[in-house]
Every structure is written in structure tokens, then in C-alpha cells.
Image: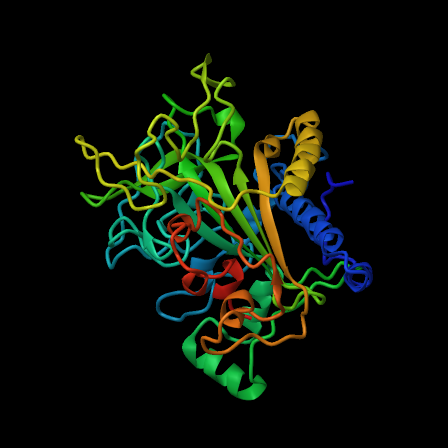
Length: 415
């Protein structure tokens, strides 16, 4: 069943190819949607205090991916060797040339900031390295603010297969990358093999929203306490409770060498049942979207927000590519199983999954329309566009011609 601790290595490619030969694209697509859900559940499976998997998905404990390496622990500004895998102490992310003071706030029972068990979030961009001490930018534009006026934070982590490949080949600094490419011609991360325990390289990108005790219901979120920089004025590391709002998964497999790309969001991000209720401070309050004000019909959507009179910024996010009905139906089935298991993952939905329909087809070069758009990453990806509303917010402007539209998540990844 889908509620398994097993991270799937790949889809059944013999079955996929048979379905494609029969012209059954949607049936083949369903294999990838199930794969995406199984991967999401397995990656977020809770661990006990000893770091072992809990028997049930609804049990307390940090998600499994918290044992993975942060990208800033692997690719360091000075090109030095990455922190050892699974180390108890970690290198803090580079913010500026100065070391930020560590917080003295003991109100949260939380590990020291340098502990490998601590989440440390500093990036305000889903695609670039921007922090609150820089100009703040998100994919192609600005940072993202929720309806409480708080900034969204992002992080990228990689599994041990990808980590080992980078370290073994010294790809963590420019000289090592040049040497490797001269010898091998191109990067080739390890691939997952269907029916085996060989997982291949997996990279995840997470989007986190600060949970406001006066406005948010933490019981609806996968939560983590994390250290974030307090702000540009006398910045400090401060611990706050964060809720997961977006989750990208990229997995390299034998059948999908251009990677399988899947993306999930919290169900309250942009639309909610306005008659439903959340619990804030123990009291029922009407449910509100985290990134959309349904009472503001005149708010410009998916553009960097102007500050209110009191300086507060709130991004009005709208999903312009709707989740297909078949995907919504699968989501409801899996969410029901997760709710029965008392897992907060029931509050998340698969937005979509993208995979190569012709894995052997090389990417288009130059601006030959339409190939440059629909096959930017090679392999004839399906669907062509896949956007997460809290990770590619300002890509979804809705007024870009197809030949200007940044492709799906896969157009921006290494091989």
C-alpha cells in the first residue's frame, strides 16, 4: 500500500513502456503519481529518538529527511570538503562575512544551533542564495510573504547517494568539477533501479511558513522548530515554529534519467473550504488560505507585493494551472488513508509529477519553437509545465507567451 516506509527506486518501466505503446499516456502517468505519493510519505516518515523509523506514519518524531545533508553543508563558499555525512555538529550556513550571534532565548526546548538535529533556515529564495541580509529574491523575482506578513524560507537537502557521488568525485569545488568533466564528459548521478534497493540520487527542496500562534493552527502542519535570522537590523538567530508549505522531490532513476520531478503543497496554501474551521489557541476560527486573501478581489496576483500602510507585505498567490481531476481523486484517496493513520501528511496534496516520455531524446538547443519550451530538459517531459505556487510564485504570471514561459522545474537542474 501507499503507507510504507519504503522509498521506491523507480516506477515499473516495463509496464510504463507497455502502456505508452498502447497510447495510454494517462495510465502511465498514474504510475508516476503513485510513485510520487509513496516517496513523499516515505521521506516524511517519523523517526524515534534513536533515529529509527517509527511503526506508524502518525507517530511523533522528526521526518526521515532530517538526517540528510543540507546543500550548504556540501557546497561551501570556500570550496572546502563537505561536513561528514550524518555528523552531530554542522557548519552553519553563510549569511554574511560576520557570524550572527546565537540566540539566548531558552523558551523553546530546542537543540543548539550547531547541532545536526537543528533546522537552520536562512534562504528566502527557492532558486538562488538570497537571505534577509541581501536583497530578497525568489524564483525570477522577489521573496514570498504569507498573509500574516511573514517571509517564507527555503532549504535544499540531498540523500546519501547524491552526497557520496559529490564527495567521491570532489564535485564540491570548481577544480574538481572541471577535472571530472574533462575525464567523463558529463555528470551522471547514480540512478534508482526498479525492484532493487538501489535508490539513486534524490534531492528535495522545502518551503516553510512561520506559524503565528495568533493566526495559525499547527496541528494542520508538519512542523519543525527552526532557527532563522531575525532581520536586517542587528540580526540574530532566533528559534521559531515553522510549518511545511511546499515540497519538491527530484529523483534520478534508470527509466527517467532526466529525473522524476514531483511537487506537493499544503492544502491551505491558496484555497480552503471557507465554511471549515481551524483551531487557534484552542478556539475554532474560520479557515483562511495561508497565501491568498479571498476578500481582496482587487489584489494583484502572483506579483511582488507592495507594503501596506504599516509596512506589512502579503503576497496574493493564485494557482493558474489547476490540479487535474484524476490527480485530485488520487489525492483524496491517499489523504483519507493518512487521516485514518492520524498523520499530518493528510493536509498535503500532490500538485503534479513530471517525467520523460522519451528518455533517450536529447534536449533541444537554442530557441527553436516549440521544442525549446516543451523539451527544454530533454526526454519530452510530461506534463510540460509543473509549478508549485509557493516555490515558483512569480513564474505564474499568467501573461507570459508560451515561448517565454520558464519550463517546468526540470529545466533548471543539473544532470
